[in-house]
Amino acid sequence: MKLLKSQLYIKDLKKALCNINLEQLQNKTIAVTGGLGLIGSTVVDLLFEYGKLKKIYVLGRDPKKFEERYSETSNIEFVKYDALKDINFKFVPDYIIHSAGLANPALYINQPVETILSNFVGVYSLLEFAKRTNVKRLLYISSSEVYGTKNTNEAFKEGIYGTINIDNIRSSYPVAKRSAEMLCNAYNTEYNLRTLIVRPGHIYGPSASKKDMRISSEFAFLSAEGKHLELKSSGLQKRSYCYSIDCAAQILTVLLKGEPGEAYNIGHDEITSIREMASFYAKAGNVKLIMQQPTSQELAAFNPMNNATLDNTKIKSLGYKNLFSVEEGCIHTVKILKEFS
Image 1 (cartoon, rainbow, N blue to C red):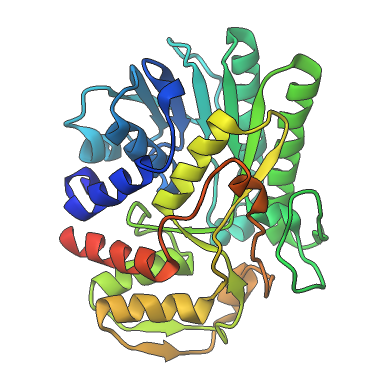
Image 2: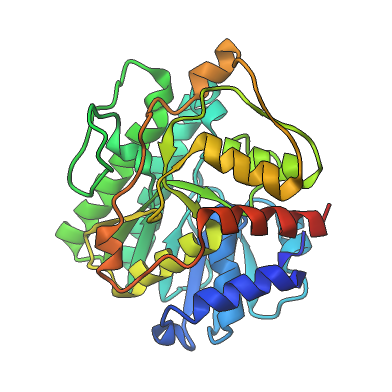
């Protein structure tokens, strides 16, 4: 799917670029691990549209997927990458954005060992590489799930944490993310390696994979295909849904303007329920939204939080503001996906 051929997608990228300053990246090189995933590929697209970098290295596992996405681009280079294998890069980038790692709720239960190792070992290897080669900054893409669960209805704020039940195997993901964050902070403190952390909440957009079973991705594809949506919960859970281009712009803002050793939430001003998000998709695809009961397997993979909204005050202090409403982002996602269906 060549998203860079979608006029609507390019228009959204240009809108984001008008609201962030990337001058520091002129003639620089940047490596994006997981650069073919939902978040990583959107970062790559935004950097490509900016057009003033010397080289963008996309680190991933699937060269065929890279060719399908970026075959006609000149300054984007694919690098075979496996988070569980030793790093032997033949280049030294100025900046690293690490977005690789298992992020599929079903795998947290079925492959908890791989979930933990890919998230922790992957960031360790990159930190060692960055330390040896004097990389300017390394930004780690963590997750809002590091906050755990809480008993209040307030949005999650950096520095204030809930609990994580380590007896529940689904916790393999948030525990791994917490550990990786601590390792980033340890390298910043002990070795003065400029590490930064971002914690995306619930990100959606046209760069999602059809294999992504998270509801915000699954519903986008179903809607684009004209299929009815089945919501297997009350849908009243609150989230900070964020369009992938908004997310990518926030990541680059933190990379260039954030304080090393600090973590920043990536969310949205709007508080949106799952049902509201689903209704936006249903409207965009002109399909029905049907309420169903979940299976026991689906229940086990659910995010346990009824209110997983994020306080985005800290990232806004860097000068960032949301560019797309949740409804607008959902509608654009479906329209763009329809172009390629």
